[in-house]
Length: 144
Image (cartoon, rainbow, N blue to C red):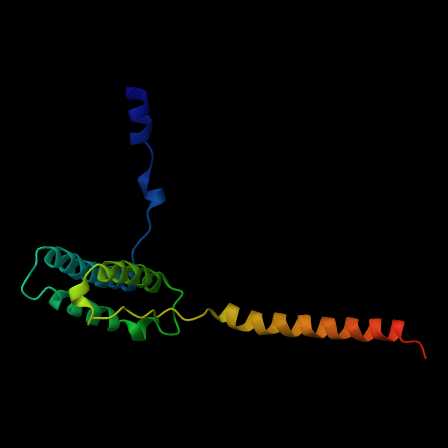
């Protein structure tokens, strides 16, 4: 047992860490503040506060402030985590009948550029292929 512990102690941890740059740190700080407001909203809405939806409105507004960050740039980690937050918030909001005026949070995730380009190209390729095949088959069966 002690030998196993000593094996784990001697593993260099620095190989499994990475430095956090300033932008990532700022994003983590924003997410932490957003989740903190959400947890306050969840806690207060369960204790029948006088204004149970006030914190929900604040939380929704804070989420909507990040729209410009994620519109058109939805493939970064921050925007994906905002999407996870949106799902949690909307699920909690469904259980709170008195907070219907807040409305569900919109998604800032747009379609990816790869999907936007590849779908029309694929459809055009399939149409061209079937047009070519139907022309050749039509010429083969229709002998003049």
